[in-house]
Length: 334
Image 1 (cartoon, rainbow, N blue to C red):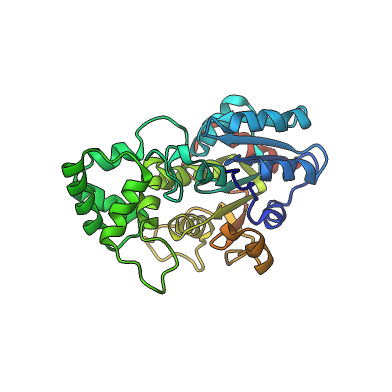
Image 2 (tube, rainbow, N blue to C red; image 1 turned 60 degrees about the vertical axis):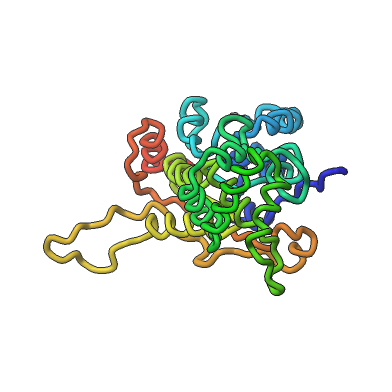
């Protein structure tokens, strides 16, 4: 079966949020199939994109796209949570915009051998960078209480203890759980499907394991602080997320970084650091009905956009970060 083509979610809104301009340098921290990167390169003359992806399968796609835009696309293999170190080392910053399309990509979901989805028979893998512990390792080696915590915390599954108990019992009787189909059936046996619930009972368990295996929440937290450090004043951050855990992290980060004291501090009251971002849109931007019809996976997406102020990044001492803000104060283009 041919995999469905990758369709960038909220593409027009991301480009508008980034305010892409001629000569700007932008980070696509989740390159994937290169949809956002291509659009940024095509949006204005002489734009440059620093593309980052932890999945080895992304490299040939980046190399093919780079050939169409000589000298304008720089691919850095690695995690977007490490963007600060990656871009510092490559000498490519500071930057005018950072975009992140958080979570698993369409290509990863649609490739059965990657083991992200129970919709196709495959090994219980789920590793974005195809290295390290697999989901099967986690399912077969983790104690019941810890497994329940993973499913509850990252899958937001209320019946996590029941599921963890069933997993441990099944692996004790039948041996290691190695396939997506077997895990899904174990979950379905103990989680009743409600008539009004459109999602499969195994969905939340698979989500929890995937997020845990890839440290996706930690990755997002590090990526947000990395973007804060790399962005020039006036630069834009545009983050697309697909479920409440991700969006909550982005919303909390921006709430903290845009907070300002509204009145004079009381004696002894700690003065908060200056805001490092200002919101471009106070509410998350959602896809329209037409996009959801064209791409059903867009339905749960939401975009948050913020603009970098000239305040120094929090807890950062990299020379690159100081150069970015010194350049702004000298009146250089941002």
